[in-house]
Length: 343
Ligand SMILES: Cc1cc2nc3c(=O)[nH]c(=O)nc-3n(C[C@H](O)[C@H](O)[C@H](O)COP(=O)(O)OP(=O)(O)OC[C@H]3O[C@@H](n4cnc5c(N)ncnc54)[C@H](O)[C@@H]3O)c2cc1C
Image 1: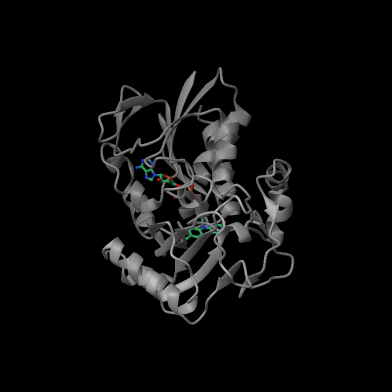
Image 2: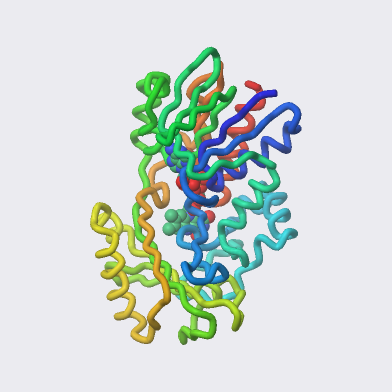
């Protein structure tokens, strides 16, 4: 039985695990996932209020946007998520959203991370959270993978689905395996940066605005505000509302290394200028997205690149194509295609 390690429990990692399981049964393939965070989702994460686990907010991705060119190509993925109630059509009012012909938007009633969890559950993979991969070495024809907490394990195949700059931070033999031209291409991949703020409220609090979400075009700090339950169409008197604020990319880039508490205060002040009636939240989370969305993908957008064949080491994710649901599906499909012939 081959042991495969998927590094990263974001959308690409979850999809790789599910697609691999569809290709090969449990007795032939043992799938393991190591994720440095405490839960699944990555940039499709859903945060919970410190006071009420029912009060949640999507701090990263907001919607799934289906472009006409993908409606047919990825039809089975959309049908699967719609039939399981993971996706629902977006019906709420989003002010300032660009409407394009043939484009459909979907929301996730249980939060955006429910997409990733759906695929991880389907895969039956063994998932280990708070497992940060920092070193990958060759040992007797296998990959030896280490975390700073002293966890060491060996695998026949390693699949990296982490942002490209984080691939370049890995230590061990992987640093010599990446050849000069691959390194140059990897170094040219770039991402935007931004902050997200989640404000969590007790049940019964009203946030009295006539929209569910709003794009703001002329503010140097704030680009997007959402009343998250309203956007997801799950407003209920029993669930506390939450507000999500995304900053502009220029604000995110300018303040990338700033103290996060100061940034939180700054965003709150700017939010109050836009919505003076915003109530005091019971808890707040400020998220720095250092690697938010891909601004320049790996040359030729191949979906994956194979770094080593025996044993197999491959990397993929949105850095190798583009930043959204369909990009991650294409990346995961090309990873699995490359891997099938090397198992
Ligand atoms: C603010 C924001 C808004 C967005 N809006 C949308 C949207 O509306 N619609 C849309 O489709 N997309 C949107 N996106 C883009 C979308 O979220 C990403 O394209 C997608 O989630 C990328 O998934 P991924 O699995 O490739 O990478 P990630 O989600 O980054 O997953 C990588 C995972 O690897 C983990 N990891 C990293 N390094 C290590 C390590 N060394 N060891 C172990 N684990 C590690 C990370 O913790 C993470 O969980 C948005 C993104 C952001 C940040």
